[in-house]
Length: 202
Image: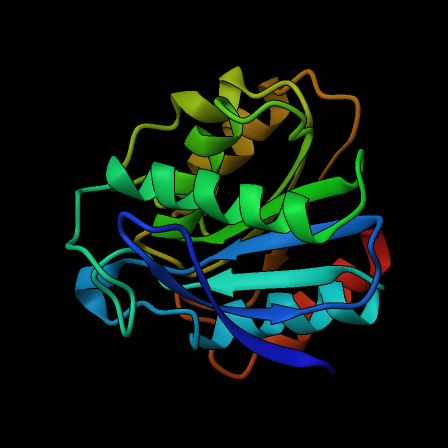
């Protein structure tokens, strides 16, 4: 894996890790909640990165504002949307014109990712792990018209399975998929299942 530490954007400047290979397809991976220890070094973020990289994607994971070496301060999920836009723009500049870019997010990162996807032209696919229904509004999921893939933990109390299944049934998407893993919200020891699911569908 060709790993590069990069800094993206300027206000604030964000700390990121780029694994550069295919110039025709890429993925931006978003980490869980900054105030609860979330960072780009999270186990689920790493599992997603591994899966996408092994399927030939150029991957970009980054720290939201105020996390690690990233500048700025936490902005309650609003400024973080701008962080995702910044990451996508950086990846677009890295890849060829008209390259395909997917957004992937875990928990808080899933919530921010789907809202960012509604604002970024050309994002037609998103990979979501543990969307936190107990904390955040699920309506952005219904607004997105592209392809969506979901991972959920069967015993997750923060991102419960039942509301996800109900919404999943209502989504009139061209392509969608849902995998339920025997896990709670943190997927410790289940990372390889996430990686393999990505490799199966992409």
